[in-house]
Structure formats: C-alpha cells, structure tokens
Image 1 (cartoon, rainbow, N blue to C red):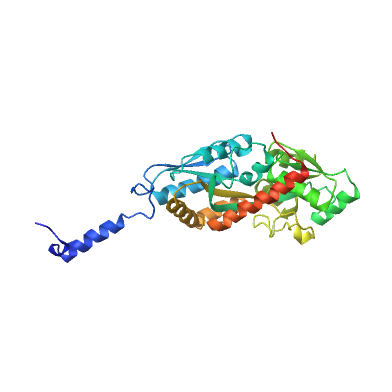
Image 2: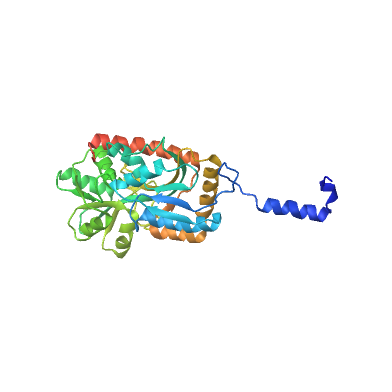
Length: 331
C-alpha cells in the first residue's frame, strides 16, 4: 500500500516537518553534505603571538561555537608572510581552509620578485576584519610635538633626522617612505627587526622618530615615556585619543594603517564564503570581541565582500607606487 501524507495525523506530520527544518544547514560543500562536517583550518602566515595570530585565535574560538566544528589556527610564518600566503593559495578550495593576513597581502606582490601568490587571482576576499593605524612617535625630549612641527624640523636640518621601522617592507616603513616622497623631506630610514625594538630605540632616544602600529606604542604614550606625534589615519585612535592625526596638524597624504583580512582560496563555493562572511560579521559585534579588539588597539571594520575586494585593489596600487618610487626590493 502506498502511504500518502493524508494517512498521517496532522500533529505527527507537523512534527516531522519541523524536525526536518531544524536540521537544515544554510551552506553545503556541493556534495549534499551539510557544511561543515570536519575541522576548519585558518592559516596565519606569521609566528604565534603577533596581532594577526591573536585576532585569529579570538575568531577561531567564536567560529568553533557558531559552526559546531573545531576551527584551528595554523601558523605558517616566514618570508614576510609569503610562505603562509602561498600555502593558502594552493590549498584545496573545498571550504575547509581560509587565510587571515595583514596588509602583507597587498604589499608583498610589489615588494618581492617572486612572492608565490597572486592576491587577486588566488583568493576570494571575505572581509577586512579590523585595522590598526600606524603612528609616528618620538622621545619626549625631541623638539617637535606634531606632524607639522616634525616636517618643519626636518626641512630646517636636512639629513639630521631619521625614522625607525619594524623592518624593510613593513607598512610602517612604507608609511615613512610615503611621507618622505610626498613631502619631499630628507629623513633616513633605520630598519629594526620588529616593533618591540623600535619602541625600545625611541624610549632610549636612540632615534629621532619611530613608526609602528598603534598597539605597541600606546602603553608608553599613556605612561608619558613616549610622545605620540601623529596618528596616520583619517581619525584619532580610540586607544590614545589625545594624539592628533597628521591631517589635523596640516600634513596630508600620508595616512596608512595595517589591515587584517579574511580570505578563502579561489574557487571556494559561494555558499560557503557567504556563510563565513555572515558568521564573522556576527562575531565581530559581540561585546567581548569588541573589548578585545580595543585592547589590542584595532578598530573593527567587518565590511562587505565587495568593499574588501575594492580595498585590496586600492592598497595594491597605493603600496606598489610607494615601493617603486622608493626603489625598495626584497629578494
């Protein structure tokens, strides 16, 4: 005998319908299986402990809760992030590998002869998670207090002043070159091996200025042992609101920041990309995540896929121009 829906009691039929709907998933891998069905890997192309890694671990914990599968951070540092980015570019596009990366994604293709990846062709932008402004700092004994006074001092004494950066090709280094080129000033670059050594050099008054992201400098600015000269962003940092922007001091065209972007390998199913975008949007609005980002000195961006894709294109062009004009190259 063929059993049709009319043979079921109405209550039982309704219960079966609701149960089926409760187990529906908003995304699948294309094989008919609900997504995700196994752990998800997020490649961070830097060593543990840095800002990208910390943000990644905050995201991984929240995504694990939301997706019901373990989301793990896979640190693959080396070559300025190129090793990890190249690995993510070659990863299977089945929705189980993603990339969380800094502005190195947009800088390295112009900086390195063979970075090992194409930021446009090899990835699908999901969202710019957060961004941290770069900042110019100095020892309190230096004679300038803002960007306008710094530029005037450098122009009055060409060759006397310098800026320290966390290393050749970092966005703070490129910010310094952008400043040097756009303002036509004679200021020398002193590369260090990270933001920590730059902060130490500024505190010891071994360099006339330093340029880093905001987070490593903020505690010392608050303590008064370091002077914040200019935040290189359209608006002041909430972490150190008393430090003016360069634009407020009358110096334009040198804004820069360090972005943290979330991407998938090219060819990842659209429904998976859309699902991950929705989940990241939700987690970045959680109060504890907002507090953690503020503590780290990052402003939450959490933009659309289209907006982030546009940002990637614009940043590649911006930093490429600065790198070419400054004749910077890392082999």
